[in-house]
Amino acid sequence: MSGLPRQLTLELTAKCNFRCPYCYCVWHEDPALAKPALDFAGWCRVLDRCAADGVDDLLFTGGEVLLLKDLLKLLAYAQKVLPGARLALFTNGSRMTEPLLRRFRKQGVYLTTSLQGLRTYQEMTGTRRSFKRQLALIARAAELKWPFAVSITITKANRDEAADLYAAAALSGASSILVAAMMAEGRGRDHLDLMLTRREWERVKREIRALPSTGVPYSFADELICTCRPQPKSLLRRFADPNRTPCPAGRAFGVISPNGTFRACLHTLAARPLEV
Ligand code: SF4
Image (cartoon, rainbow, N blue to C red; front, side, top):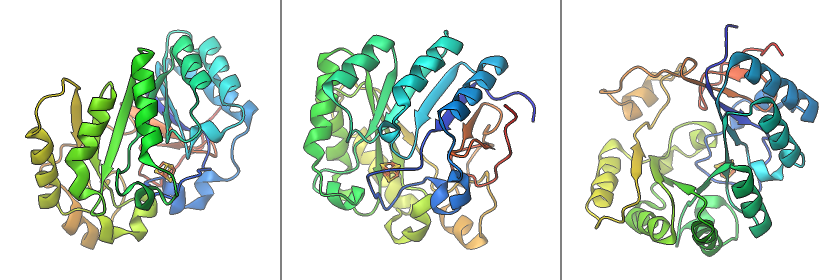
């Protein structure tokens, strides 16, 4: 393949300690994308290729990225071979600790976490955990003056508390907030009953826009279905956005799967080997 896009997401592990019913990770549809999982040496070779191709924006994610035992070593390697690149982690927050927060701040690694629910947190994560730890984590990062972005996915389960979720994230100290509608991808494919209609999604956006300003920048992700991949007509009829502009996936950004293959976007199953 030709050069890598400058912005890449590295899905370092398919393992996760949450069971979110809306999880968009595509190996729930095609387990081969996670097998065999790259080891530390394999990810170092991917990072070498990133350096050779001038990648300058890397997001490390999973699964749950903090379950990867070699994560800190890998971040150190990334900083060595890609000295000017922006490095970021997406974590569900369950394994984040004060020492890790401080370490990421010191290393200049940007952080994003998810806030899946308040009253619905357990239903949205498939765990017995509480949202309170997430809010405390966001607040602690704000105290340490290290940006912690928050991503909120809205389904029919947490739809009634969407505005509360936004307010809780903003008032806890989130540096920015992305509110997204659940997509019909990954494990979400088995839970289409949880998806909002386009009309319900627009109502959620209006509710959030109507809140008093918190000064926290926010944006909405409008896609309910990925149009980078072939989709059944029945799903396109239900969920495709008629006003959608062409997606720059694969050119402006791309993804490396847990097994080291390249995909154009997070939601597509089509993968190509990456020469490293
Ligand atoms: S959405 Fe994230 S936290 Fe939830 S199961 Fe998927 S990878 Fe884990």
